[in-house]
Image (cartoon, one colour):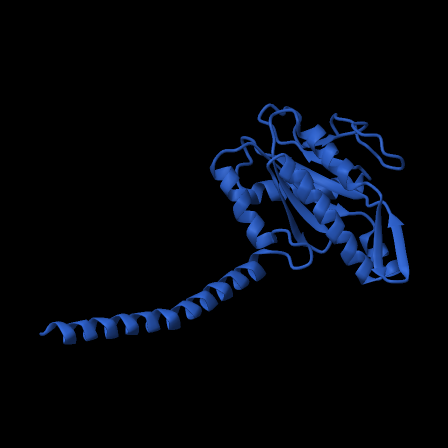
Length: 235
């Protein structure tokens, strides 16, 4: 083949390749954007922007697989239904959003995660060393329970102080799976509400010698008016 036809063939091939890339790249970008959007919808809570249950559980399981000492904190807001009923769902949504920001900031500071499981229930996944769980829980709840202002509409301003109850569970000899920790934290949250406690630790220690008494009460770590703070000791 002479030089000129070869040159023409090369130019045509290059042009076809560029045309193919020009056609393919936008399609690839659209596919990637669609995938990222679908992933976001499946893993991120739409209202608060926090990880949802589907995303949070793998984060927890990864920490446990790496044998990282962890505290799970199940938390829900007190009187949330009343706030919704009295002030409307827009106020309830804003309350959830502001609480989510506080919880996300508080957990990120210590290298943890905050997630919204649904309704007014949040899951916190926190690194913890032996003995510091009480101060960690109290610090987070103290940051959450500060006064805030809601603006559900242009003519309405609501000032309130959010309150919460929490159930805690720690990794240990019998709790190195996400399912086990969440189950223990759920039991502790129920106990906290029943006892009108600020929070409650599900205690499951290999050195526990009193059968059936695996709840630890916590009090007076932070003194907040109108709250019941439970002191460490056997329930």
